[in-house]
Image (cartoon, rainbow, N blue to C red; front, side):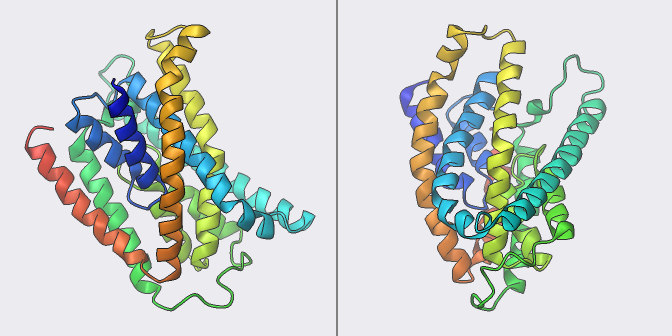
Length: 289
């Protein structure tokens, strides 16, 4: 993989990850167009390393907001931590459950089957993009009022709503194209959570979710006997570290754009984009990608 390919994938990941348009779908399409295999251990590890860069962009961008809300008092911190942990547990149960079901059904006759084998199938990514687009579109069209006085209030985020967001995030894990940020923010909005609160909570969940996903992909790469531990692992992660830095910079730009569109009531436009992107992906699939 060349330096130019890494930079292209980092830019695509950084810009798309923090917008509700499924960065994974965009990266997979970019990899396909460049003749790379999105399902290979090296490429899935690179993808999660790019996620690491955007994770740090999220922390930097949202830190002041989290400090004013989640860290404003001991009670607020305990409440936020409980809701985040609850949502993450639900995500893990549903996400891993779906992964196991898919591996045991679709790949029941295959040896050493892994969910990552589906990641290069554009015919599966297209409907996932469309599903995310419909969800975003519904949430955006139902939310037509300007930002209200309580739009920055997290009191509406209770156990039930946090559980719903965590469950929707779990549904996103096995499917490339089903935008995690788009689905979770939209689910929160439809459940009655102010959009800025839903955005804050969604990206806090992303920070929690990223480290175990990275660990999973490192373990998968080691098990695939592509690399050994120690210096060889560090060498294999080198391209990912470079990509992570570039995706960090692109992610900051994407976050600023996302927040502006949320505040101006343009959320539904991301849904329209996902539907158009689904059509493009299906077109590429029919032409052999």
